[in-house]
Amino acid sequence: MLSQLFVLSQRGDSIVFRDYRGDVPKGSAEIFFRKVKFWKEDGGEEAPPVYNVDGVNYFHVKVVGLLFVATSRTNLSPSLVLELLQRIACVIKDYLGVLNEDSLRKNFVLVYEVLDEVVQGTKRMPGTAITKSVVANEPGGRKREEIFVDIIEKISITFSSSGYILTSEIDGTIQMKSYLTGNPEIKLALNEDLSIGRASGRSVYDYGGLAGSGAVVLDDCNFHESVHLDSFDVDRTLILVPPDGEFPVMNYRITQEFKPPFRINTSIEEAGSLKAEVILKIRAEFPSDITANSLDIFLWYSHRRQLGIQSKL
Image 1 (tube, rainbow, N blue to C red):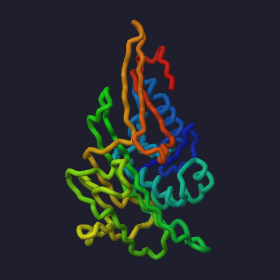
Image 2: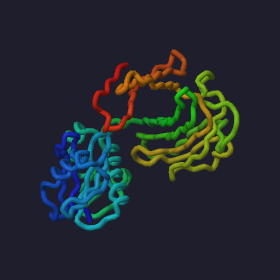
Image 3: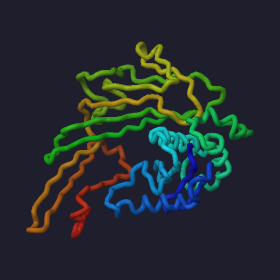
Image 4: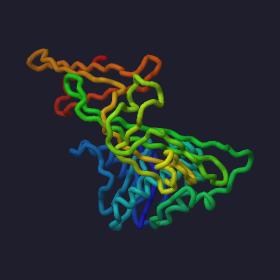
């Protein structure tokens, strides 16, 4: 059984705190944050998601900079508790619209109602549809008849020193959030040229072509449990009744060759007996009418060789 559940800010401030059993010291939040903050000084890289201090098991996940933490003196399934913390963060986000420190403080009464309904010292997998009728009444006034569909893709590419692509992969998700009343049936039409399984041909990710042209070839994919695939093989249409909250309609993976949005060239030159210059060149491969926002560049190196390192863009 869970003893405590709390949410900490990046500074270690306690935003939400619930003590269910009283068998763990009240200063557990401070003990947890001190251990996480100084974990690197103890010889580790990052604090593991589960660890034990003085007989207390600490479970935590980090979501948008916030630490969702649960404590227990009994042996619990780590994967179960971590999944519970992730679900709690997701449900709170569905209620508040945005998940950050400010929204938690402004809506702390609602957050405590969610926690009291989801966790009362025992573990229950929460969902927005389950807690919606219990935690809060439907607000009055005109409702928003809106639905949001986002396509989120993560591209992983390994370049050689000369700029050639060694490995490439795309992990994508079609994310949906519905504000429609009455749980209507929704039809989501995908590209009719979509095929599943490796195949040859021009990739849709060739930025030189027209938008929407070319076949879309997926290595594999999976769908949310609410999606009906009765007509998917015929016209690539997904039929679903969206549940409350945000959920992934479809996850997919692409490993076939595609044109990357950026191309990277690197070179290392010795500038002395104790000095080396690393030259990193990044070139955009997409047309000039497309803009890349919030570009971050990370250069990883051993922590044992940090002295004397300088960077210049």
